[in-house]
Length: 182
Image 1: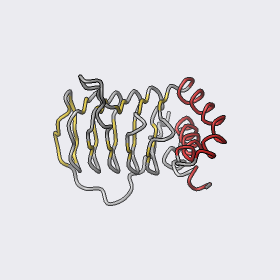
Image 2 (image 1 turned 120 degrees about the horizontal axis):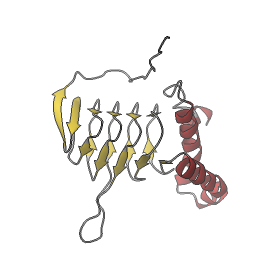
Image 3 (image 1 turned 90 degrees about the vertical axis):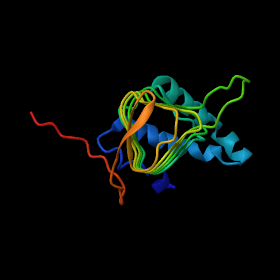
């Protein structure tokens, strides 16, 4: 249990807010299991999670969202993730990012994005609809993604388009913040 709760700790090195949010998220996650008794027991904690993380920290990351290990939450503010989104391992999301579905004309909704492993999103990225983002993908700041992005790509723009193919990553992407010396 301890290793599960702290699986994002090293990925968020030097990022206290990211560490706090991801520990709270991992503690809330067991309530998404199909166990009604566990949900009832966890209810006070879920209320705290929603109030603190969503209302005070302005990060909408529902506890039932599937998030792989080593998730880095850069500048954790204004992140909105639809609860049905699936996020792979070793992903890096910057602030003001939205992952959501689209409301159709008939009132129904599309599926949510599926994000692969080793994906890095710039600030203000919007990924909407039943979109698949491949492994080892970088999406530039301000991009609006409405179509699938293949593995090993860099995509930018509105609407986002692939501008370059990159070499596959064989190991986990780790983030080490730059140290500025004065």
